[in-house]
Image (cartoon, rainbow, N blue to C red):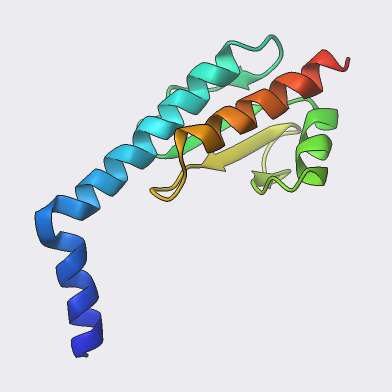
Length: 108
């Protein structure tokens, strides 16, 4: 039990939990802005947390999956995907995803 207490204590100290959440949320906003700058993707709603739903062309979904990107897809309407950002992701990670999506749409 002490092990779990130590983890929770560290998480709460100096608002680490809040800084992690704010970072993940800001990355979702950055991802939304990046996808909106590309003709093709449809961002459904400005993210209010670290989750972003959007619609991508099927060939883009397949290409991203083949490149190793992991995200939920095909659980909703055709082309709808869910991206989730994490405190462990960086702005560079988000930019690479945006660049990958852009390159898929340019191939059309």
